[in-house]
Length: 142
Image (cartoon, rainbow, N blue to C red; front, side, top):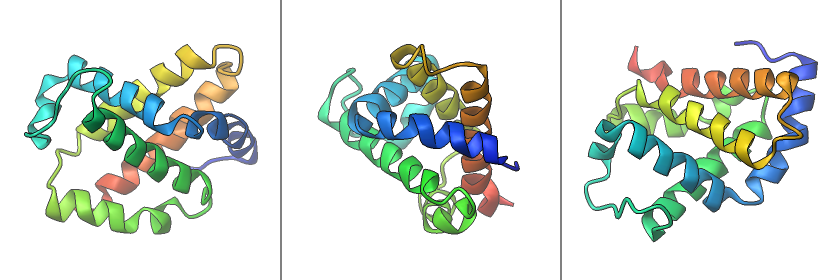
């Protein structure tokens, strides 16, 4: 999905605020995904799924850090996340349908915590960004 200059502007305007609380917001998005789509828990057999567990916060930070890296490379998301794509496709064998589930929860979390910044243009830009990230992470499955 092509990100326009306007999309990139909106992403770069809001993402640093999200990334500053990566473990918290990433963890919140993961927790929401696990609660809304329990089948996604199968990849985390040893996790404590309670909302603020160290497992949720640590993995939330990993998710946020990866998205932050992608945000810093909006013109080359595929190259930036290539190793992560390999990991999820070949080693972890994560169901590719899980990425859109998490992307949706990330949008929800951003909307909750940044209601004034989460206008329609920012919503559209972040959605396109997260779809792009999901597409990259599932590209090795084909």
